Length: 184
Image (cartoon, rainbow, N blue to C red; front, side):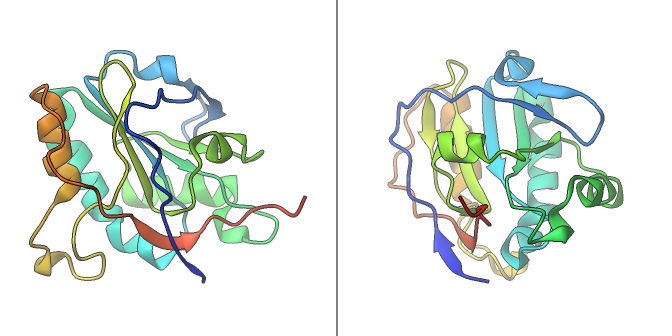
């Protein structure tokens, strides 16, 4: 596991489109989330301890904000050949085990991760209703111990976005395992 930090996509960047298969048997594009007032594109995976430690918080976040028009789409871009835990079959199992309230998509070609300049799992991108980036940073200030979280930056950024306000703080990068890139 190589600790990696998110790179920080520039605020205002338009969300790159995608067309990826989900664990629910459907294909999803950016247009699939057109009704969302805010969209979180979350790069994650099954095996990373950082991603797993935050998983229940993302589930709770989606459940808490669903009625406010916020949607999460999770994307796994890891090379399943070298990390079999992250295979599409295992993604389906994980979706069921955790009852994900959001789509979990497979980016087998890794083109989507490259388009977003995703670097780690989890890597979090929050877009407003116009699909302009408003936040690319960490979930909160304690990835390991949820009971010791004192600052929930992503929730603050969502609240600002829903209120039509700019995020008033500089995001701290997300951190986690590096995306497992295929050898070119």
